[in-house]
Length: 260
Image (cartoon, rainbow, N blue to C red; front, top):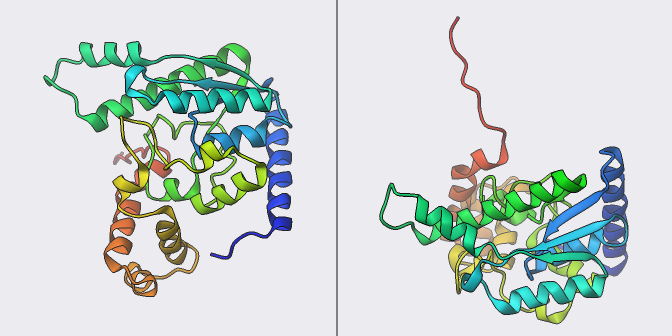
């Protein structure tokens, strides 16, 4: 995909801010609440929202399962933006869920990571309810298409400002917005467990993933054609399988018809 020029980036930023402002006004909401993690996606979303709507950030580490540096980066960003923020350690809540689930002796790392995402969602919507705010999500197009999110967790939101942007484009936007290097340069991670990185789990860089997804979705190529074009057919097949298997994450739950 062609890289956005400076003029296009400025236009995109202005357009997104205007639409965020309009969306909040149309809902008669007091402002927005965002889960800020210390990563690129939430940093870009918070920076987009801060100048145009009343913005509150919740920073929600999970005890010693989260990186202290990520928490500090999130706090520093919010301070720099001049937005309200609160740090809520969700470690105790996650542990309580784990301890009270007795169906299995142990819970897998991935399942527990999803619990963390859903606990964060619960706090975001608690805040939204109490303060008449909208929950602003931080998912991007790359993650959305391959289902790289927790259903009813980080995928739950009222608005996705960067939902139409590839991960590569989020980085371009981040650079134009002046996101700190400490955030821009760290490996992308959902922060679901210590040492987790997106690209290690997905088996490729976002640059490679975005090129293939763009060919399949925007250019209407088959996975085989896309894979041959970029010289990586196994990755193209893997991504297409993820898209197919996670389609249920991108639609409302299906109601099954019955004969009458």
